[in-house]
Image: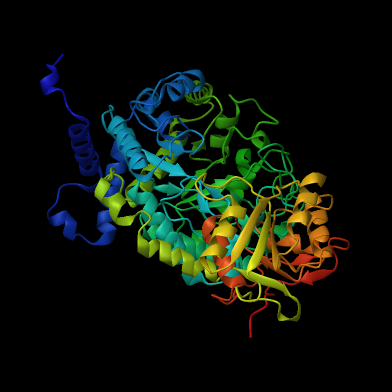
Length: 612
């Protein structure tokens, strides 16, 4: 045992491990650096194969797993997080987890306390890489998260928050979509996160879809394809692996696969025309990874197995028909949709047999890891099949530069994350997404001179990133900054009769009422709130802060806008449109149909009003 003074520091381990890993893939500098790209690619492939050849079976099994872990630090988490790790994963820290299971990937969540602030995230990432590079076969970890932006966002302020997919669909600009992804990717990379589970390639044709909705770019396959392509180029141009999801398409479901197993009833022809085009486009754009969906598509596989476990869908359709040879990652394996038919020890084995490469967040890592190890030892899975997945994962890591540069720095964080330029660009993009759906007699834009007293009421869902909002406060603050005198009253997603009466009383003496609506259903008391406020005679403006379909279920408003998300960047943009500081430019990327008769389209795709 060496004297502590001579023990390697984490910095030394990072340097030595990174050098060893980089040398194993790229070779020494010199003539090789001048080689033709094809020859260089062949050499990289040969070196990656040698790495796989040096791995133990346990190391190979570890490479196909991506796990959660609790805590803000790789080696010194808070006691509560260490306890959660012991309870769920059998270790205290992220470093121990990587060392024990030789993990190929880690996924960050806000609820796992991984994402306090950018510098902490970068340090956590570096600590995880230190553990991986100190192992027997030094291979960097692919750190990932769900940073779709809009309503799914794990890392919040001071990182830049950008409009989500449907907002970008309303903008309709591939250039803006690519720019947004480039900003998001650059900031993730600076924090050591090198795989983003975005963009969403689902075509949302079901207004009642409980899990996709505004996470989709829209309902037109061609428009979705163009924006998916743009975002892939933005993310991957910034050094982050993009992940198109959820194959073979989650846009026409009435069941949330987190809680049940959806069935897609599209015919083969409908699937090919509606669901497949964005994934074809993603493959043509060189997508690094494709995520599976936990849903049944009888037209593609009549067995009743979810797509995640379906050999006909993943190997037959995705790899065979669509010609995809990149990484296939499961949606989270702790979701109910993939657990309804098989036990947790069978799911990971069946997923690999179906054609999956990465197994994301199994509920019990030890059970899943040992099940795969046993399947290989027993011959149910061949080691050659496992090697194919490991090699795909290593290729992805090499392509995104992880072998050469697995770690990040404070300087990278300070120079990239939440910069004034990125924040200003986010505001500019957001302004082009706000969609004006109703504007009776040209009521908007508002002026502080004529409508200075504003009552702001409505829903206050928790921030997608945990760092912004609440929405009514954000709307009120933005109005105040533009010269209005707002009064803010949060009425909630399900306002009580007493709260509605309080809002009606507060309307007295106001010049205008702004109501933030959130997923208004046929029985939602939000409908009563809007109608009662309109009956006061004070003009009402509704702002749909999630689904644009709300406008079909509210009555009496003089104007209605769609903001597509309740993050501050989109709400501030909506206020600038309300006040005429920006013109409404957004156009609906989905149709809004009548609540009474879905056969009647109230607002078609492409609809959006403008100011004169």
